[in-house]
Image 1: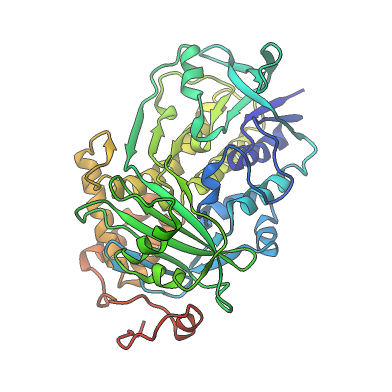
Image 2: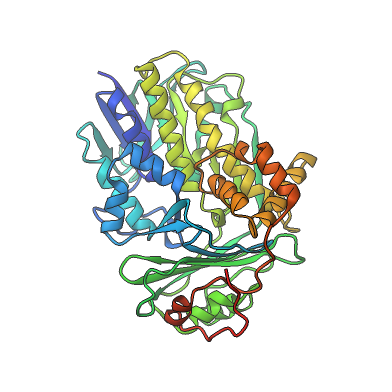
Length: 469
């Protein structure tokens, strides 16, 4: 009997289980906690309280692995926003125009996103969850992993061993994969970190009547401005609610004081989100999260990689959540696993783990480049100093973004990459480089590109200098 073990019952773990299930007889998901049976908070996932945006590339991957997921989300209250028409965004280079739709993204609570993926996955009779356990190590050697050792969370009883043909670490930010591999003699894993000290603060509000399905609104920080970076985003979620997240880097963090929440949003580069929530009714207190650093483990670059072991999702890389990439990277990593299994047809295939690890690094690299290209500019960012290559990429990304504020062609190219439907090489094509040299074709907007109806339902005062967009 062929068996796969998946470490972690979050989104990455469920998607990995779905990806491998057709190639084995049995998939066992090892999970510390009891998983909820509905769209409710999952213990051990504090970041779930904050805004989550699922990019088109990630949603496409989940739909490929678990057909019907998008319809389930929408039926249960999620929102599908067409891009770029369904977003009002102030970039470091200025307001983006709302061009005709070419892409999309999905917004809802993280609890709903997880619930649908979990319920879709666990319909498969080959997949079972073993809760209340934690993995303590890997069985095998530096050339092949043959299973895991695990213990009960309660601490009662001795450690157990469980064998498997394939072990997948999808345990998230707290992954101990590097330690487990070191115990097997694999210690040459390069790692890169970049920490801006970002703090997230989030509240949920009751949406104004008629404004339950407004565009996503995003006021980004400008990392090149002196002082800390501060930002905010507002998105509609299920049950006629808005979720609003504030972010501030080291020295400019939001607090958990409800009285400070609106004031912080009003003091941003543009007060739009503060103006909206100042007239809205809050439904929750302020939730705070501080674990937001970028960390990249280059598993694919090790000299030796064991057969029978794969790391996916946040176990490979974590990103500043302001860029909304984590779920999509995890989904595309699981999709890479499915593709390799379809090609080889056997989880015991020689070299499978190395090929999957390299394939999963593709979407990670693209997301990492986009996140760090901005974050390296924060003066109080901690971590490895940016290289001259990093600075070139950052300057190039800024040029592309400025062009995208007034060019449909460039906005589409950048949205291809930011929604993770295309890799970063999309931006190196001659046509894109030529457009970047030419620059924006329209003058910059000085006010957010809201429609008359949106201003009314958002209870905003008329803007006498509103521009045609």
